[in-house]
Structure formats: structure tokens, C-alpha cells
Length: 222
Image (cartoon, rainbow, N blue to C red; front, side):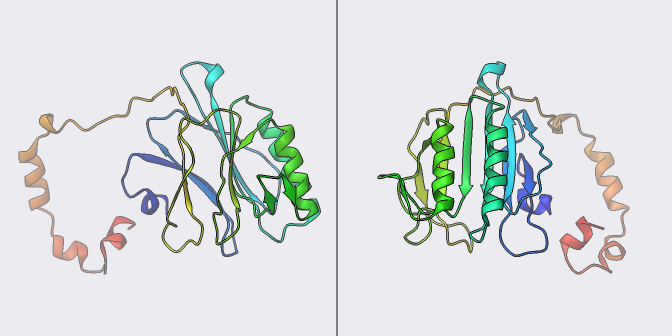
């Protein structure tokens, strides 16, 4: 599944799936040259949470990304567990980006809420010292997807059309990252023995090889 998502592009994928139900789940596609560490947790939540740390050239500038999908039918106990986990994760780093679909009803101009769940999350966001950077509705007339940061953005959050069948806007933003890049191996085509490769492939009985498969994907995963 990961190979189908990445499609051979130079990215690593990190996921927190939502098993046995439709919708939900979060994932990150990170440039394969980035030095990334997954911040694991053991809490069982209704929400889906994924936390990764992008390592920088100096340990002071590591940036931690916390991705969240909070279902709209979350109970009070679910929210309390989620806030506790977010608090623990946020305490690990001074440079935090919390983002995702929280399904909250918060007026980010007046900082007023319409329910107790939204009020509790707003208090946590305020206590964490983070800034909410999304100003326009992200799903119909609702601002459900938020980007909270304790580091200044180098660009305003842009809203782009939804991806595929999603009804949520795509959010684009930039933050300063002075990453510790990894050197990735690259094929040396000039040193390849093409004569031997041609001979090897010419000896393969391709008709027999593909005869029992109906698509390239079947062959890829055989």
C-alpha cells in the first residue's frame, strides 16, 4: 500500500491508520532526505494521532509535527485523553506544529466556542502558547482543519482545492527548517554493464512470466 501512495517518488510515508472503519487516519509523506524520528505513544484513543520530529543540524531547532484526526462524535473522556496526549507530546519540544481535522466549533476571531468540547481544546491551545494560522472555512462553511504553531511561518496559509474525493480544502504553508539531510544512494548508470543486462533480459521467457497475471501490479507484488 505504501508503494502505491508514494509511487516511486523520493518520500517516506508515516501513518496512523484507522482500522475497521471508513474515514479517519493520518499520514505524513516526508522527503526521503529528511532525518525523521517517529514519536511513539501507547495511548488508545478514538482520535488518530501521529507525531514525528524532523531533525535539524542543531538539536535546538528540531521541529515536531503532531497530526490529528478527531472524530466529530468524540465523547468527553475521548477528548480528555487526546488533550493529555497532545500535552505530553508538545512538552517534548519548543518548536511544535499541531495540525489536522479537529471537528471543533471555534470562532478564531472572537475566540468564542459553541460547545464545551471546543472550549476545552481552545484552552489547551491557548495554554500551549501556539498560534492558529487558518482564517477561512476549510469544509463548506466550517473551519475544521487547523494549523497551530509555536514557530513563525515563512508564508501565510494558502487554501487550495480539495484533493481527490475529499470535501476539505488543502492547506499549504511553509516553515523554516534547517534540516539534517541524509545522503541517499543513487544508481551509477555510467558504470552499468548494459551488455550483460540485455543478455539477461533477452533470456527471460516474458510470455510465460506474465501469462498468469492480469496487470502489472499483480506482477509487482508476486
